[in-house]
Structure formats: C-alpha cells, structure tokens
Image (cartoon, rainbow, N blue to C red):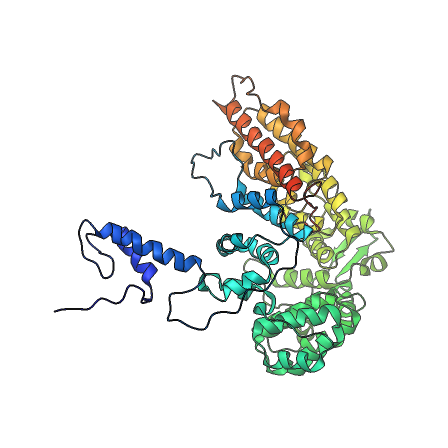
Length: 551
C-alpha cells in the first residue's frame, strides 16, 4: 500500500513529542516521520529536531500561514549595562550540580543568586536584552518563585511572547489581568464594564487596583455582585480587603459574617478581629474576658481560666469554629479562638491595669498557661502588636529561647515578623549567640537581606564554632546556603581566615576540616560574586529587602 508523505513544511500536532520518542527508542525501532530505518535515519532525526527547535524558539507553533502578529511593544526603560547583561546570561545558563554525598564544591550556585539579581535589576528599573527573554521565561516556567520578579523585569514583551508560545502561557495567568490593560480609575463606565464582564484574572487585578486608589469604589463593586459570585471567588475578593483595611470596611464585613460559605465567614471574622474598634472585636473581648480573670485569694495573684460551656450560633457567626481538630478538646479549642480574636488592649483593663509584661509573667492555674499564651501569640501576630510580641518572645538568651508564650519555632518566627527589621535581626543574633545554629534556620528566614552586621557576625561565629567542633558541614548546609544569599558581601574579608584546612583533633570526623574549608571558600566566592553583580548593575550593594522573605 502506497502512502504519500506530508510535505516537509506541513506542521504536525505533537511533532516535537514524536521526535523525542524516536530519539529515546532509537531510530531502528522508531524511524522519524516520513523516513525509514537505516544509516540515514539518525541524520534525518537530527535535521527534523533542528527545524523544530528553531520553530519553538521563534515562539510560534508550527501552523498554516496566518496574519503576522503585531510588533512587540517598545520598552522605554534604560538598557541593561553590558557587564550586567553578560552576568544575566551566565545566571540563566547555570544548572544545579549533580554531585552527591552532600558535597557541593567551591563553585557558587548561580541559579540561587538569580532572584537577588532580578530584585536589584528591578530596583534600578532596567530593561532586559530582547535575546534574554526566552531564557527568562523558561526559568520562570520551571520555578514559580521567580515568576513575579521575571515578569516585572521582562515587561510587556514577555506577555507578547507568551501569547505566541503555549509553553509560556503561565505568564498571562500570573500577570495582573492576564496582561490586559486596566481602565483608568476615573473611567467609571470602563471599570464597571470590566468588573461585570471581565475574566476572573482581570477582575482580581481590577479590584486590587481600585482598592489601592479608591477603597469605597472597590467596596461598591464587591457589594454589587456579591450575591451572584461563586464561593471561591468571594473568598479571593474578600482577601483583597486586607490591603488598607479600615473602619469603613466594617459594615460590608459584618454582612459577610452571614455568608453561606464557612471559609468566607472565617475570613471576614479574621479581618474584623484585626480591625481596631470593630463591633466583632468588642463582642470577642466580652466573651474572652468572661473566661479569664485574676484570683487574688491565693498567695500570689494568679490567672484563672473558665472555659466556655458551649459554642452558640452567635459565636459561630463571629467566626468561632465549633468542631475542634483531632486530639483537641472542644472547650479549650473555643477558648483559644476567643482569646485570639479579642483585642490585646482588653487584657490590661481586665487584669488589674497590668502591662503586657506583667500579665504574661503571672502564673496560670490548672495547666492553662500553654493554651492561653499560645492564643495571645496568635493575637499578637494577627493584630501586628509589637509590644505583646516582644513580651511573648522573651529574651533570646532564655533557656531554649522559649519566651513565655513562644511554644514553637514557627510561633517565634511569626512573632518576629511584627518587629522592625533592626530589632528582628538583633533578637535572632542573640538567639544564635546563645543556642547556636541548629534551630536558627526558620528564624533567619524572617530577617531582612542583606543581614545586619551583628546578625552576620553571629552566623559566621557560630559556623566557626561548628567547624572547630569537628563535625561535617552538611548539617549546616541550609544555614550556609542562606549565608551565601543573605550575608552582606562586605563580610567576605572577615572569612579569609577560615579558608585554610584546620588541624583536625583526634575526635574530629575524618576529612571534616577539608570539607569546611571548601564550604567557606564557596561562601567567600559567592559573596564576592554578589558584590560584582551589584557593581555591574551600577549600585553600591544589592538593595535591602523591604520584607522578611529570603530571596
């Protein structure tokens, strides 16, 4: 039976997948489309792969001739300096090493420096070289943590490319409004039309923009379509009110307490409890105050706790979840939720005018201390109360750094998030100086980048102590990785004395000194590379992170 092969330039669905399959199975078993097994089959496969690679890199699927796309938009931002452009190409070309056994060698992990490079380039307002856009989009496709920074740096041209290549379609979903232009805030008709007729991503972006500029209009938009929205969409829209939460939002949030979705009700209650002076906060203060009091009849003033007897419908409406998680008692579960939602200012008046420090220092009867203090921890985080957070954290030098209410590292990290960057770094430095690095990883992740000098010194000193103890450095690989990204590059000179292989004691792990010297060499090389990156971008140093997330 004769068959006529398709013309070589006819696009075939899934042609790339066919070529990959042929390469994996071998051309003897799977000859390329339109060919036959034989000595020429591998060459035909490579030729077809080369053609398909060009098509893919061009950003277009093989398809019948169609109307040419509109030209890519101009990028008015300043051109990236040539040395920085070369550095970007190196960062994008790097691939993680495959060495095993925990040994990474002395070479910096360039892909781990890419987030910091992007943050610095975005802070300077540079435009990327056009030829770097495909590699940038490929990197962001594989790493979701890069997407926001990549899309900001790549600009409108990345969205233009994403509309032509389905591999980069994520950029349209990740960009506000899917890359669509939002109407001006003073265009009332345009705003209303997009809100009522737009795609979900467009509506989310519109609501965020309107909320930032005209909060009252954003509430009107929400109220106008609230009854017809899906529960998952109502939850997403309601979350937008966290930005600029104000007393004017209270009536709308009070109505949301009666929503048919439990998640929506819970989010509304959380927002109201974080709103100073809200009616829900006052109701929770009354309920929580009825459960906690000071008993003066004992030898020492003591907090006594009377847990709720039931969770009634009014409590449920205000966000109290009636059913506890597995392993928790109902009444203690209700108590924790009431105390967490009550304004922290309630307790000074309720407990004899005492300060937060005096309240937390009081003994608590009948083993309720952990439950009560944990609820106060959650309240301090929710209400962003630095004074209560400071008291609940306690001194970093306390035994196991366990402040009166900090019952876990996760809670300590959250409490640290309410403090300013300088105080946060000082507390973590004190923790490391007392307790070392074994439990410091999560706390270090809350500190601004680059680390403040006292924190950087504390980390380096602790690493030096760990080296002298004779253990392998792999137990500290997480902290060492953070140091490579977060230590101030100016600290590199302080590390020169740690590059030599130390004399090993009899009880040291075999070869540990060499591994430590290798790890410190990589740290120094990375710090100097970060300094060079900053110079190439025209800045004195990598910009400080305004938040607490490590890049």
